[in-house]
Length: 118
Image (cartoon, rainbow, N blue to C red; front, side):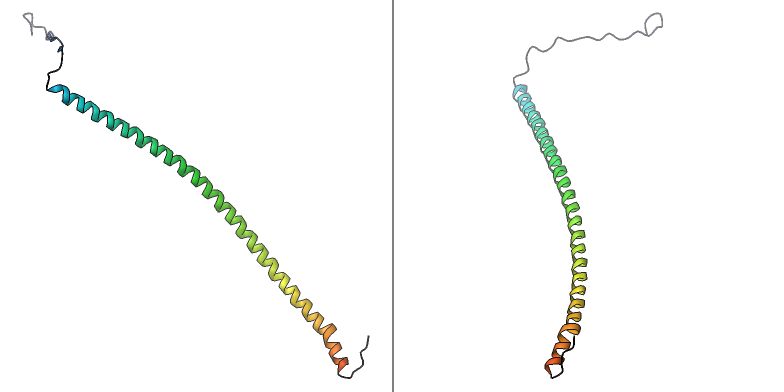
């Protein structure tokens, strides 16, 4: 407070800037700046590597999804062909049975001495 009872801000005394660093501070400052620069560069490289890895992971993920879709499609086709194959086998057995009953059995009877009737 001043003489009148009012608050006045304290005056800030500015000191003149140092003309040059002390001789023993220079190597420490240079080493500190070099370390900070290397840490920043390492951080940048790490971020770049992470970005590349993320892009590659995304690309591989899309490829995997496409491959899974193709696998599902091929599995459905395999099942379709298995079903068709099973039906074809059933028809082959039916045809074989018909040939046995209608063509081969009557012939074997005529060979045994019976006349063949048409």
